[in-house]
Image (tube, rainbow, N blue to C red; front, side, top):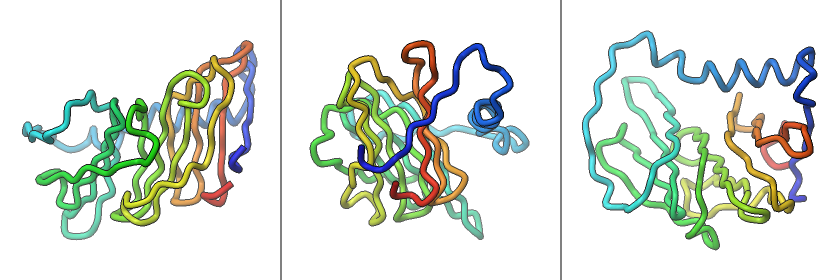
Length: 177
């Protein structure tokens, strides 16, 4: 199935180290932002969508690349910390609900969509969103991935709603399989 290896964790099994690690990872993703004073400025994107997630890659001298994903197949990237946005198109994904994005600078990002059966997908770009490679498609009708998190450009985890009483957990250690 396009290379990602599914893992499962039973709901009642609280001693599962992988599940605990992932719960900690996903719940603490926003902690680095909590220590600094934050302010928001409304920026119009020109897209009619409900944005679901953003991913920020910080660089030296305060520069940042920001990736955003949302409903109606929307994927956007800002190369100047959110001042100007560019829409990216995922061929064949124009109607998908992109629930998560994990970006690494200007070129590499992972994108996860949620929906019934084959609408639940994971894509990857290595050219700034010019082309997206389908890496995984969940075929079961009741599958519903919720989040994606990466430790590096090659090591990522995706977490889905329980099926048959088990959480669905996907992992890649090389960014391809």
